Image (tube, rainbow, N blue to C red; front, side):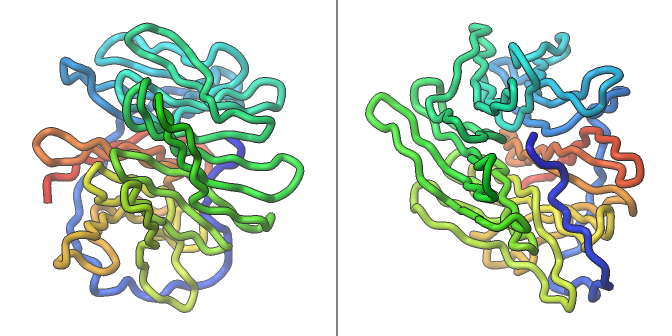
Length: 316
């Protein structure tokens, strides 16, 4: 991964939380907590409704080098990247999308869990492609990904459609300053999310079919709040992380049901993390009963240790 946490470090106090944020709090649960760092989870189900998890794990004895992994049900996890380092970020069973870094070059690959075959994405270039999230099938898919220049500050988030009749990429966002930041978050069905920090962070939702992009509202404060790590379900309901300026300061997970006029303007509070803990990425899986399983990597800001947690969110 090219960058770590996108939480900006600053000094200053925050205003009180707006009363328009509904206080509906659930309980987060540990999901992966091995001795190594575990990050960037993505979750789906197979044909037998068993969990299929893609995740990134640091190497034993080397917390700064990572590999991409997948695990189906209770079977043993296996490594996805054939060489170099690997980072996961997307899954649409049986397809896992991941980033592979070899010799200073970052490209996107797909792993077919049914055939155990790896294949490079057709959008790879000499630039730094990273954090891919996929929706669809191997024959007809959309791919959300980042493309960064390695010799200047330009970063882009793009959406690519690949099929027998369509091979086109759409630019969703771009930044050109070293103090700004873009992160592709999740693609799920006909909706995508990404984070843009200029320098304050906001989450955006893209309607793939309509071709429209909206910024999710957040409370106005003397010191602007940060919103990042957006996840989305196939109906366009978005889950975001909101925090203060420092890592682990007043970190919350909120839900935005943007099509529901009764949902609060600034989202519904789902959980508040303990002080000193933060989140880098999140991924939403829709379940058959209308609920959502949210998986995310939770970091201890003091030690830098990452574990994967999950949050079960009942149907609205």
